[in-house]
Image 1 (cartoon, rainbow, N blue to C red):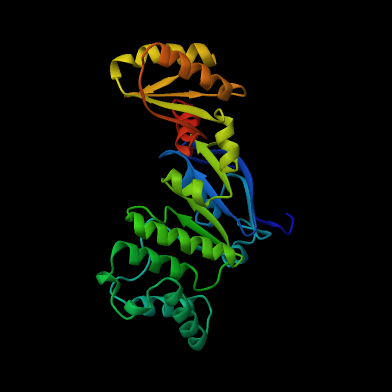
Image 2 (cartoon, rainbow, N blue to C red):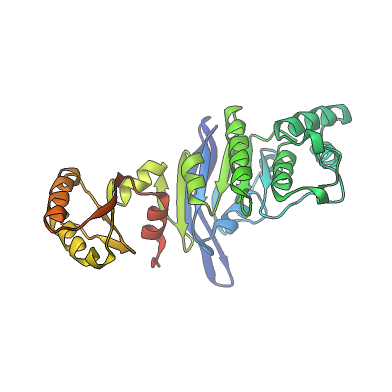
Length: 313
């Protein structure tokens, strides 16, 4: 394991009651990056996270965190990371400051250092004005920021975030995104699972996509988008009754299938497709098919997710 690698997962497998839920998964995560783990419900994400954070042992394979094996050196491996799970792990009857002080001392900080670190995190996460209020009075977004602050009290090199923005409003999600990016700017490595694909697209340097326990794609967001066809044409018609005719024109010109969503047609452009757009527009005009909107765009991670996971076994 080289010095630039924070996490190394090698040939990891896990079964429950004869059902294999993680199947021979391998990947590496570089220091100082955000790594996203995506997959549908039941894909094996939670099981994999539990193995990486020493809550479960792999049946086969190995997981290394900053050079320490989670199986053979679990105590040293646990010192390398913090975790923010889907459910809050902090005491709702205590204040944000009190929670931070308790977790600081549990992480080996002196009372003085815990107070200093708590004040720093309360400021960083915009909680200083509410620091001494009970968490039960906090909004959902404030509680999630408190969760993240607690996971950082021991200044871990690696941070596991399991769907950290689920249920948050758009403004609070954006605040959390900024907080995560600030962590990486200071040298932390972030391992992120999320149900929001635009979140992974915006934040992640690399993404692993798993389904039915298998790793089915790995790369940068742009790499994954290229795997499902690169640039695509998105064309919306003014008249829904002309969609089938427009679909025939597009498919003939591009020699590619065009999908339909209401009055919008979507088709991959391929290597020479952009030149074919002019031909398509001329033919649509000649057929008196009016267009209300036209875009040439990269596929989204939604496209990647559905094309690579839906119907796979």
